[in-house]
Length: 381
Ligand code: 5AD
Image (tube, rainbow, N blue to C red; front, side):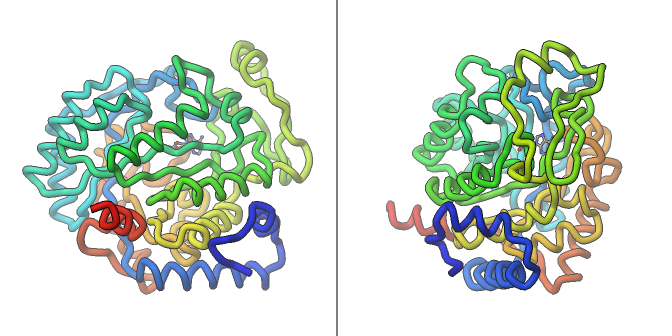
């Protein structure tokens, strides 16, 4: 029984499944639903990492405020150069992503979005963290139509442990933020990390059920990859679970006071591995058949040769090739060895296109909104 009505415990059972033959039925089902609902075209979104400044201190993230790293913010002319590259190469959508930079000026974003729309006619997706309603409306009026904000985990206690509080900034605020985006009329994307320390199989099953409950248009999830210069970076992976040992360089402030939840030290801990990421992609496709689902960078980071292609063959229909200027890429190091860090946009795009070709898929032409979003917006008209 594999359909959109799977219960949370059935989802959890699939996440724990190890039998190769049974898993093949999951991959086949997800691939079939993908073909029927969103077709063989793969939507390419040009990803621009416009700023690595961040006001938050998420325990897992390499651009967290407390980490010492050279900070940058791309000037508008450089962003527009990327738009020009996208336009020339048939990338109809740009994703502007940044840390949650409270000082990133709303007017700057609005003007940039408007220039991208007016001068290049591209669809704009924003991924700039939690912002006020008036900013969201302003950016929408300037031409942005999609917004991405992962909720990271559906377990409120785990969310709290991973995200030291700023004003607000809790799990409830994140879910409310996704609902505000929806209300304002954005096409809404979210997702989680897979194998974050403290995440159990039941947690991950509830994450998937929440994708369905939120009726997401876009669902991007990938394995957690420890960054050595973060509080979660020194935990050692041991088999299928995480040890709580830390190296001596760990700052005591981060280690002791903030990271107070206990890890499950048994096979309850989700491993941060691609086989789990593929299960999440496939189950997301089964549960949310009309969503756009990317094959994400962290999957490609763990397996540069086959990662992207495997996710595309197990439910995914979107790739977000990085088109950030090479000089900035090494600074947007949310985790180490991120795929394509030392390439230019041309190379990254060519690699993506070759991989599509290898699995008999092709670049979609046009904005490529999720059928889920199109059905909702035509119903409300
Ligand atoms: N490993 C994997 N994914 C990460 N992200 C942030 N840090 C890491 C990490 N160390 C993800 C988060 C965030 C997205 C932009 O990148 O899910 O929402």
